[in-house]
Image 1 (cartoon, rainbow, N blue to C red):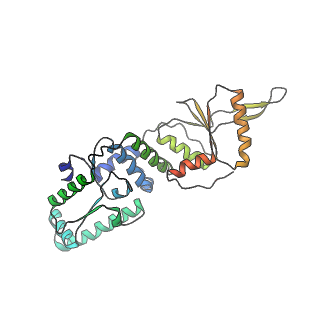
Image 2 (cartoon, rainbow, N blue to C red):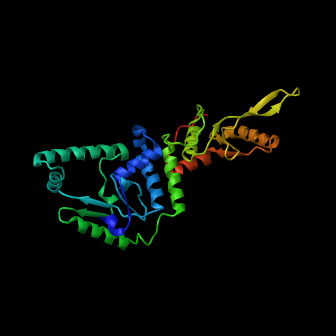
Length: 298
């Protein structure tokens, strides 16, 4: 009813489930570890096209500290909830009371799996409506009034720049769990020698950027007879951009040796494009977007 009054797009839990399966696949056990960034990715994209009314458990966690959102919670005493179940399911009161306990337990368990908490604290919501004293149309009118008072319509849709920022944040967090969109453009995966390389590969997967891991070794030093004494193998090659990427996530004392190799590579092979990411740069990037620090092996 609220969506109809406001002319907004209604997004239900069922619709979100379908969209997320299309985007991320069917791995439910893995997917539930990263429910929040996955919801953020889906809803941010939809919010660039429509104003949304999202009706799904846990949606209040997604856009925390985001000004363009009104979070609403509907509550009712047990007697009212039991009565509604009796009408909806055509069952007697004892059966309805039992069913209510089962449904509440299931929702608490699902919230705990997906969001780390069985319940949502009241401070997550901007407006709480009590269905024991308000009818459905009255609640819809109050929500509509709150939306108008907050000026959410006048603020417009989510901008492309804001969407890009949110998508990057969500995808960096998802890459930590190896969650990628269905049909991502990836090449054969190789074992990685460092956890930072796996994080970077997952990020490329999520952006659907094709990559190869250590595909080429370049000789950079020879003896007087022309025998190769030393070679350099960049970590990644991105064929769409003809770009090599080297992740130098090691102790600073060892960086000098790596810099020497990169310098020789550029001098000997000036046509080779290579980008170097140093430890501080790489860690600042992933920590900024919420990825937990991982042990650094040298």
